[in-house]
Image (cartoon, rainbow, N blue to C red; front, side):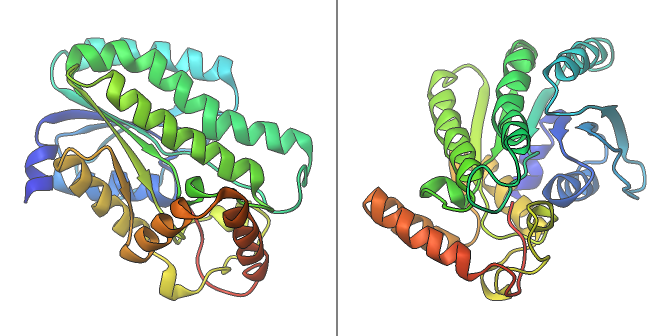
Length: 273
């Protein structure tokens, strides 16, 4: 009920990666709860979503391309100014991907593309849209990961990019305190999306007992937003693992993580956010 009431104050949602996984679930779930919301999706392909009455605008955008992001932001701000003169706005930086293997596998170009999507795109989008968010009021949700809590061998660049996103979000939250713009970092654990397949792993690499659905991550996010949280780890098992990882000496956490990640390669389960 609290989540539903919180959503009613928003007029528009801007999100990246709404064509699949957690992003798609955000549109589907929130669109049903608040049909009057206008959704602006930035991704390479448009979402295939069948929600009656859904107001969805798609912007073709390669989030590893800074010039494309800049152009889309200009269009987006103009459209918001014309069509949404008032009402809070929710920005969800959701897009991200990972790779598996010793650095720099599969190749350096893919590693740099990952940094552009996971790290640079949220920074660029937030910077470009922040004046609009300040003017309207609203919130920024950054989808990090439980990988942010320890070094992740065989997924070194991915884990480091999510650690950046988590710490950047928490610092930004303090900078924007009292501005009318709230910042929330969400840290999902293994989630049934296309993440591991994209990383070059089997579709099922983590046991079902520790995985979550995208819908569960969305629910966790909405409850955390409604309660004014600045960080949330999705799922009680993930909370325990994140707390443990945070308290271990970093060299020990890195040694444990690389062994766990190597153990689960191709063994069966879900995918990560």
